[in-house]
Length: 587
Image (cartoon, rainbow, N blue to C red):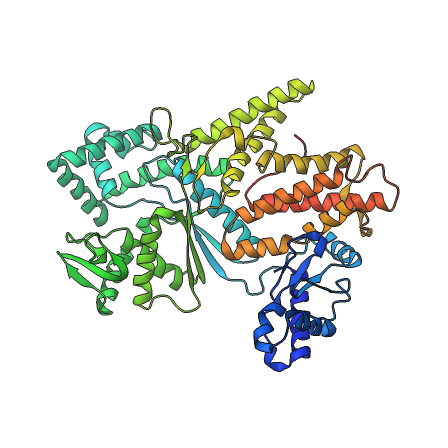
């Protein structure tokens, strides 16, 4: 709820008490944005919900509320419509005052959280010895945007990269490399990441078909867990090599993370099992130690257990996730822990959350949130793959986006007969290409699958990054054309006269509500929708035929409209930064 809506809600609550007595304190006035601008800006629907309780017609109830309602500083006189809706229209003078107030505010009127919290966002989380692929795209981009928004709101955010850097796969890979490429286990960067991935696949094939090799691999895991010097050295080399490759992707995407892999929690796993045993939750089932869960059954309808220690004494993902959860609560002191993973892991999170709650490990003031997302699909509607059927490498996907943006820009420059330096072309192509991929993902409701299309995401029309970037650059172009320094506009007053100015002003003042909503529901697409609508409102305001003159206008309208341009640009820039997207001063 934005500041204006909050003020109106308080006034309506007071009017309810004044009209009907103290019993109505705390009754929700059901204040919503008006569905049609011609009815005003807000609509209170509480009269309809009170009809039965008060034994009166809704219009009579609405009239009694309006009689006691004082919103004269904010709104025109309230109007009652239909069966009993209370319509509220914001005063132009109030809108002007609000805009004048946020001009000097670097946060554009968005208040920081009243009670900042320690929050953890667990995202990206690739596996060591494997390349990042299209499957890591959504977690990385969505997680980063969520972290940025929480940080902007003033929360103390720990961005964690829970990489897969432990377990059977390392015994398997090390055992295989000892045979075929021992230098990779003693010398840094002896293999490039592509070769390492190829060896991993061959090791997996061997592991699945060769019982003797399986035993050798398991012995390497035992040596790794025991800290054998040569195995540990080999493991560290493999991790560092993967880490370097991940960092290339993170720098391309401007992602900052603190790595804390599965290996970090390895010493804590026995205590997890021990404490679950003490709590009486552990049950031995076919040699494995399990916790049986409520609401989860197998195909036969029997209760489904969560295994925390396998029959051979080994641990699994659930054990590690329980250990990491305890550490994040006890050591990191997190009050909200956000896990950004694909929707297919929903059951896993529901299960280990349930175990942790049953064990009493989650204090009442700690919130656990699984942020699920859908799949990235190809234009055929199936999982996004290369033509050969392989998983798309994330590096290739990003390079292709930049390459296409580069070609598009070259064609546009040729068409416009415009000369630019190669440095300018490369920079614009990089920003547009990477931004297009990010925005195409973030603009979707994360719970849905979406079709990956370079053509759509690089289009300058519609809800795309190029459209947003162009809207921002267009405003900077006004500054250049008029030789205007927006920062020097000072404390001049905003004057709202034209209907497009009013529409733009009202939308600019909704930023705080949008960011507050995303902070709560963790749906970045809400911010994308807001920025897209804001860009459209600005284009209508600046439209030569239906909008207003800006540079050509007389004072004081000229300065007022320039301030509106600047506030729009600053709002777009802030919003895009919270999505992890750079802006361009010109394109």
